[in-house]
Length: 253
Image (cartoon, rainbow, N blue to C red):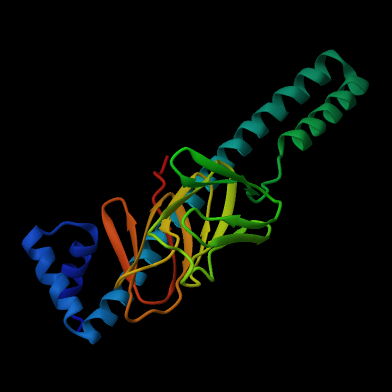
């Protein structure tokens, strides 16, 4: 499997540019043969990696242009300031102005720090638990089972396979400037970035493991050949059996 026409067809399938009938034919072909499914999963991961690579290039180019503009403005400002000081205030006033200018440079050059542990967990309609950098031994789940926050910034659902009496979804909401990690019931780990939301079941049931993402997250999926892992994001679904990948649905400015 793997020719140029097929790759074009898979790309249209991932991005939703096929008709319903064409989507169904491609899906049947992928699911009907293990080698086709493996090729599709590798193609999908490669597509996401390339999309992330080009996004990084755009960000770097934008930062470089911004840095060049700042250097030009700083150079012009320094020249005008030096000329006016020499003309009106002399050497002493010039030294004071230079010190003041250096102080401004120091105070305006803010260090970029990583996101803080800021998140909210919606366990029921209207019931929201605030999560931060503290640990919570156990959180009881309505309908049976428990979740733990033994490590700051990581909420863990493992061990609930036989304890939850009915299907239930939780929603992890990451505030702006925050980050948080969730370990799902199957052992898959999802690291969520700022201004992101992940909806997921307390316990996976049936023949698939399906979650929904808005924002940015890094997935480390536990292999599960009989139950594929599916991430719903905007206009596409990412289907894997076990791999690592990054997804970002934030709009570019």
